[in-house]
Picture 1 (cartoon, rainbow, N blue to C red):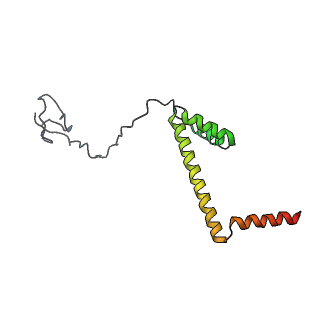
Picture 2 (picture 1 turned 120 degrees about the vertical axis):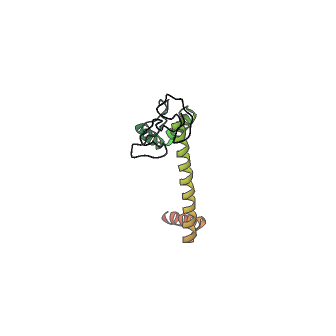
Picture 3 (picture 1 turned 180 degrees about the vertical axis):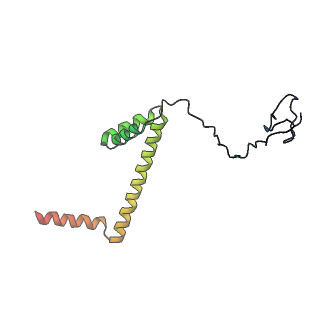
Length: 137
């Protein structure tokens, strides 16, 4: 049986077209067009990760951030997390290193701008400090 909606040649005993889903009966109901919503709910096929054992919880991220605030511990933990098999922890270390690089860059730029705007050089600051220190003695 040939579908009147899309022209697909279907078997004679089917009620719906295998291509477009339209009814092949004599008085068909309005055809459902897969490209249109027709007022019904839209379903989305969501891919759920099969392995959720490597996911890091929000509490773990908070704990990781606090561990990064401790001076020597942060270097040790960055090495441990970067070499672990957990991709979330590797990404955390990478993001943390990027933020450190951005912070250092902003600090250097701000220092240069401040020194240029005030006209003070590092040599002038050290000589003034030496003068103040020796005058106190």
